[in-house]
Length: 172
Image (cartoon, rainbow, N blue to C red; front, side):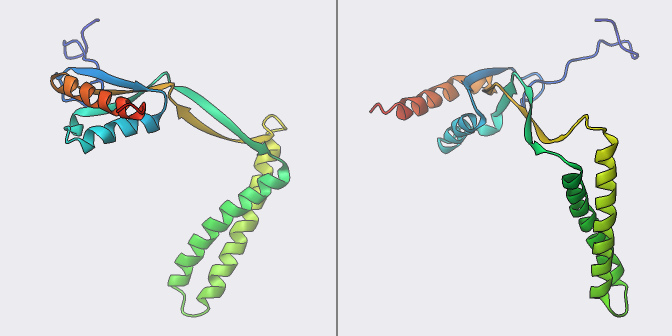
């Protein structure tokens, strides 16, 4: 790797939550976050120093769940709801400094915000020209989760996690 501007070779960012220079080891891998969280909770219940552990998601992927069809009408309704919230906020600010009729000020601002939100929502959707006629929600998901621990306490963590797996199997 070539030297940086200061003449030194840049370092890689630290992996995991360990202090710089402290090696970590994987003490367990789990197919979902809830199981990894349960493992760390088990370590905590057994007085293990959990501040020396980390849960690391690997094999990340972007998942986009389609929520439904998006029409100009639905885009206008969503825009109206968003505009109403903004109108309520503005109305509350105006209402705080109004001498009288503060409720009317809030209501008028809410209605104006909803109307403008509906107009802009419909225009924004129509401007896409039908290229994206669906609503969706995106999330990052990991393929598996690794529980890591500082190397000097990794064997203790492994033993505690073996106990957890032994109990979960139903063995006595």
